[in-house]
Amino acid sequence: MKTLTLLFASLLAAVVSAQDHFDVPKRTQFIELSSEITGMDYEIMILLPTSYEASPDASYPVLYLTDAQWDMTLVNSIVGKLNYDKSLVELVLVGISYQGADADYDDLRMQDLSPSQVGQFHSKSGGAGRFLAFLEETLIPTVEARYRIDPEKRALGGVSMGGLFTLYAMYEKPELFDRFISISPATVWDDGYIFRKDEAFAQSGAPLPVRLFLSYGGGEYSAYSEPIAKFQTVLMQRAYEDFALLNWTMEGERHGGVAAEGWTRGLRWAFRDITPYRPGPMEELLAGSAAGQDE
Image (tube, rainbow, N blue to C red; front, side):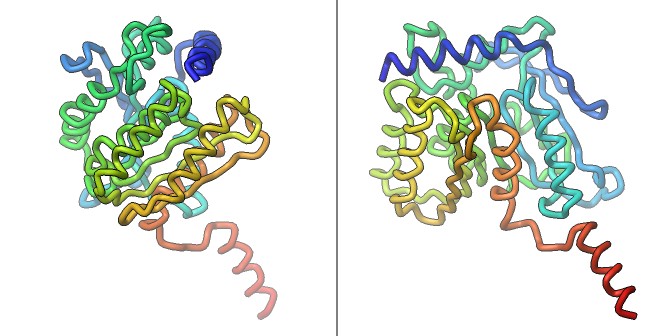
């Protein structure tokens, strides 16, 4: 398993190092934060729902997402499409990235998102506890003091190592968020670290009153995807109190292709309990046309 962990990490580094500095929607707001907890300088991206300015008395659910340098534009686009269909409540999006046009995203994220140290690959891995403390003690208070956010409807999500961190945060601080979107998480990390984390949590007898979306790509390398499928089975067999789980397989998708469907389905699941059913514009248009023909 150690060999698989190192192989995964090497492949991941090869993929992400080829990416350039990110592009974001024009209306993105930025907050720069430096953390004494992690020793990192963060660039936080904020996208507000379209009704925000016109609804001064409203507070909104929020999604905090890792790796915003790659996923913020994608997630914003998906949220817009789902809002158009009226299949998702309006959200505040809070994307977490790092300062500097030449930031080494792979190096920085591996420090923050890895829950344990695998020194053969990265000497500074294992910073997830510090990163989670930064979220709790600095980022969330800063963001939620500036924007009208409902702290009872707070979600966390990420892909790959971000998906692993999402699972880690779910067990470590289930009261901090109540919704989690874990897309193709690196369950192979450190000989199945997250399996041990789950077992310890189960042994504690504590409730897990959260909603979790957990997915992987059916076309991913089997040594990577099979542990995720196994972890899905483990969670299905748990009897956690007030735990709502949706396992999903994205048929045919490889590791780089899981984000679009994962975020689409994950967002719908995570917020389904607070998204009232309403017909979308096409349904209304077609219903109106049919009514006109009947007259």
